[in-house]
Length: 65
Image (cartoon, rainbow, N blue to C red):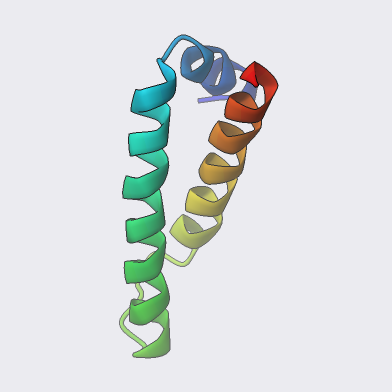
């Protein structure tokens, strides 16, 4: 899925749902960092995907005010 399409879909979601999604992704990011530290991380690309998605959601929330 392209980033533009994903951003457009995220803009249709309510603020409270986006904040909840950020919390879920932050928890996943923490879990991934622990897996990386213990050499158990299998999908290294997922770390970057989580960071980018959090950044995109936070940008959308900041645009809304």
